[in-house]
Length: 405
Image (cartoon, rainbow, N blue to C red; front, top):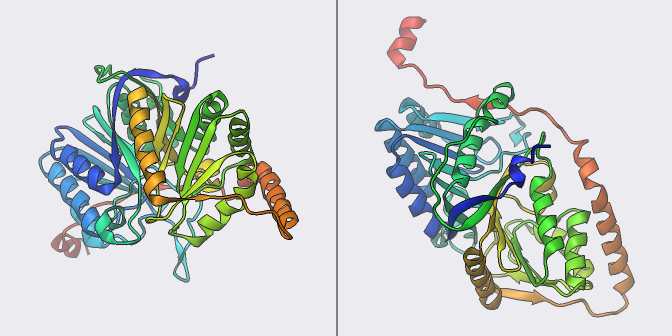
């Protein structure tokens, strides 16, 4: 049987860790400015603020000098882009697409489920970026106390060819995608010593690939596990692997939100604290500003960076993409950055003292833990429509419209 594309290690790659918008945006905008043939961008959020306008300017300039530019945004995450923002890109030749633009009822968006949550850039088929950073001002420190802490990677090497094919087929209709998935890939030269996999989650062929790679790594863990994830409420099987790793002596640490952008995030994660702490898992709450990262490392080689949270939306509904990396130097750098975060900006959560409410806490944890066992089945009951990708068309000039009427 042919192995899944997301289960093969691709050698010869190099990854550069980019922390927060201060490191990410300049590199992306510079890469787009240097593009010769093609720019592919997928993002959940694109806002008309100074960061979104920076991306807009970079894409506009690339299109005007003849570069083929493709931009895919999510209809829920990027709902209110002004007409002039979109029209100027389309008029310049940018192929602007909206995933599931949806309709509104009494001003409320209805396209809440099954979002296109990926954040990917591929330039000229040879340079890639992937992570959790959206194109909005709240990813840079000057935004203030609500600026997000987040991570992405710059990617060089043969794995970029897999990212490139994926971004090209993602904008095609499903019937056409099948003819593009299995063609030969260009052989990009080796750029480093890292082995890597490009792993996606969708609602068809790869429904649990990202979670599956997390569980495989946790089962193999022998020394340390560090997971920094913004929205943490994983399924039963992943929680079970975390507990098992801690009980066999692995140093398991979770970095979760202490100052969440949405209060329910901390409440949901807190329901699992007792269950994890009693198994020996160490929990740290990041209290400097909202945490938006989706990164993890296991032992001294395995790491992952991407768009996938560890919550029901990302693991069972959204369209996500991560890279899984096997490289000691990248693992060491990520561990250094996350250790600094824990030491300087986190509060370690201590087990709740035994007392009168202990039985109630245990009962609550037991119920939540076992209810999670059934979430993958519940996800199948939720709307499973095929969201449309709407292509934005250039409006004809006003004089042509008048003549046509």
